[in-house]
Structures are given as structure tokens and as C-alpha cells.
Image (cartoon, rainbow, N blue to C red; front, side, top):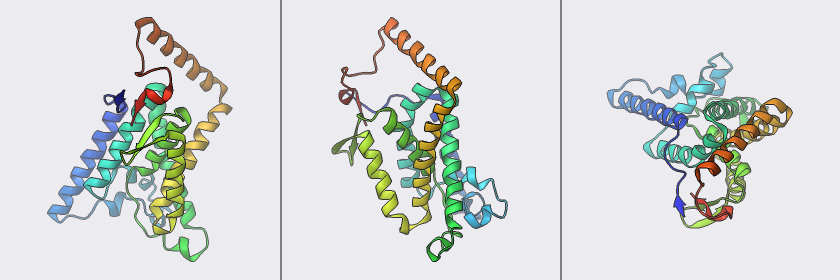
Length: 237
């Protein structure tokens, strides 16, 4: 039995490095009395409709605290490493940014639905990679539904149920802030993006051909994912 998905893959090195670098700049601005980067690069729905469109991407690299970035980067490593191995770096990065930007765009759209509850979300600043992280979590649950995830490091839960629990928590706590809408947006965009692959037969065929080649190479060189044939015992997170 092994814990964790293994060493950092190429895309994760770049993404985690970028997030940490931006967080250091944020921290430097705070201690030096300079304006907080979140005001310019965080996602504010009312600013996005005023054509501050860069916020749909830049908000993903800002974080509010060490705990915030620590848990997001930990989740990125836990769920992203194996997905990048399966998809390849190019597709992984595309999925990451599509879900992150898509979650931000849905957040903006929801904030402008008529109503008192949504109106108060228009001037709230959203920061963090959680939209893309929730997209990765959804993908992990679809690709490895029976892989155990230790919730609170104690309770082993199959990945498919873990995704449902996290989605439900985000939904029922949605009145606590616009960030929960972003979490749900990441889940929704991730699901639609993966399902839309069935409408692109050429890309789907390339994926399965690449996967077949990888499995063939693993057998040739005696490479195994770890554990036994039963997926529950291979890797735990």
C-alpha cells in the first residue's frame, strides 16, 4: 500500500510554483503596505462585466492565507498527479484552465440573476484555485470511482461518494458566500467538459489509443500502479 499519488508531474510543478510565487508577492505587498493584489486580479463579478476579463483567469492564482494555499495545493497534488499521467500534460492543463475559468464565468452569471441574495455577490472578491480543484475532484471521481480517499485522514470513502459529499457541502453552504458558487461551477463545468469528449470521436480515439500504448509499455517493462488488482487496495489518499 502506498500513500499519495507519487512525485510532482510537469504541469503540477508549474502550477504549484506559479501559485506559490504569486502568494509570496501578495505577502510582500501586505507587509510593505502596498495595495492588495486581490483588488485588481481577484474575481469580482461587477468588475468582470466592466471588461476586467483577465480576472476570470488571474483569480485562480491568488490565495487568502497560508492555510488556503496549502490545502488547495495539497488537493492539486493528490488528485491532479494521476490525472496528468492518464491524460498527458497538454490535456490536463486545458482541463484545469477550462474548469477554473468556466467556474469563474458561472459565478459572474449567477451573481446577476435577479434577486436580493445574488445581488450581494456582485461586489464580493473571489480568489483561489478551488474552482479548478473541484473540477479535478469530479474528474478523479469519474476515472477512479472506487479509489479510497481518507476523509479527515480517518474515514475511507470511495472517490465517487467523496465527490458527492463535497458537492453537497458546497451546495448547502452556498448562502455563506460566492466562493461556494465557484466550487459548484467547477464541478459542473468539469462534468460537462468530460462528457462533451464523447462528441469529439477523433480526440476520444486518440486518448484510448494512447492509453492502450501506455498499458502495453507498462506490461512490457513490468510497471504496475501499485497494490493488487482490486482498485480499492492500489493507492489511498
